[in-house]
Image (cartoon, rainbow over the protein chains, first blue to last red):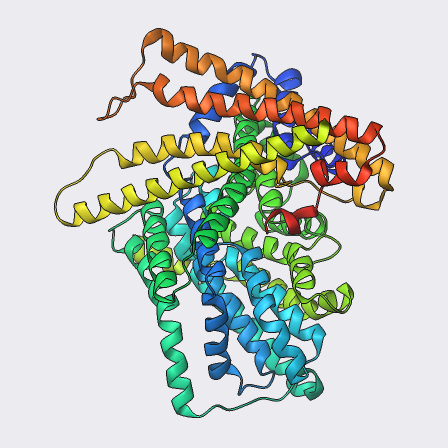
Length: 428
Length: 182
């Protein structure tokens, strides 16, 4: 069954059938060939119970929050402000790229939106100040991936939903690895620019007064992040409610900056509906496939497979990591995550691994998929935003950051505590 | 003819999407109000339940809009390396499979609603919402998705037969993931 599903999955995907529909087809297939009783009767109930869900409404809320922030010019202000603070480092503005991407991913929950925003704001600066386009654009593509790791993360919400793990715990677990990755990206940039000073442009030191004034620009976004995350851990709000609070705050900030207009709101709303439905078709499909696989006895088959392979838990994780790296060249982000969860997560958990830890590991691997060609979403987004130069420049520039992610994967496997310390210390 | 159909479908679905988004924003406002009331020791009660219904209905009604905006993610590996004719065949094939699957989903959603109608089922919650009341618009959304999928398929088929590949690519093509999330 596992082999048939995997072949079917890759075949249907290659035919360019929409990912969500492929998952339904596989579900139909499992029902027809492997299930002793007809499961398709449960289809309607599955669709209803998956979408009638108060947790998942956090998805449109977080998307809306990000849309409002991106469309109201708050990103541009943040970038300018961060430029004042980090541009003295070797590598200059490249750090501002990473820092802005990190801050925006912290609030917007979407990698693509983050990369697109930073690219739009940053690219004109790069030309003016004479940066090497490779490293500069690679840093944006890589920084933008942090959006799915640092909470609030839509991908973590979906993971939590499909694997029945606690979303607040997942958010906590993502915090340290996310920040560590951002710092790792910056460290790698410093090293590269020390070795090859030509790549990094001129580093500039701003007077203290201008730095402090810039800090004022950062207050709204930091406040927003604190309110969202704080209200979840104070027990004031569930992730869903925190998302609603975030939407209100974002609107308020946009209004304070005078950028709330009718067309801005309409665009944000349309973008939200589109992205939400896109995500939900995939999530409902995965949930149906999950249901058919479980009913057809995937658990037993996995057990036999594992004993047959005779892999140690460590060996299993290595194989899983390898699978994600290979699949990550071709499929990515949510699709990659959702199509693999029904098979991979039960397998990993059966080996005694913590599902929260594995969620974070999976996110790093998926982040890597975002910046590895030929199918690397963020590479295309950054290339689309900069409008000049070659695609290959962005790809080359992203390589150092992909290496940083690989190191992170190794660290997470060697020291699971990087992800698990916060949830166990604070989550009880 | 076929272009008029596509134009109309786009316009209608845009309005539906705006309306869906407004409902989502209202829902956010209700959730917010509930948090504030709770801090003051009171509560609206049942916001979780309402959010769930809103999510189900918003999801099903947004699907058709996303389809026309080419938002449903497709993997472009083979398709992107083919010529114009082959690309449009990929697109038509993907849309046939989608329309068929969505129709199956809509058909299988009907028993859920019909059971609620027959039994007059109410949610097992403090609000005791009559389930048919929220399942009817949810079901209608999936039916709408199926109708829009078939209508788009026929319009695109006519475009391809007339050799208007560019127009058909605009209607049912695949921008790859990068455009899908813009």
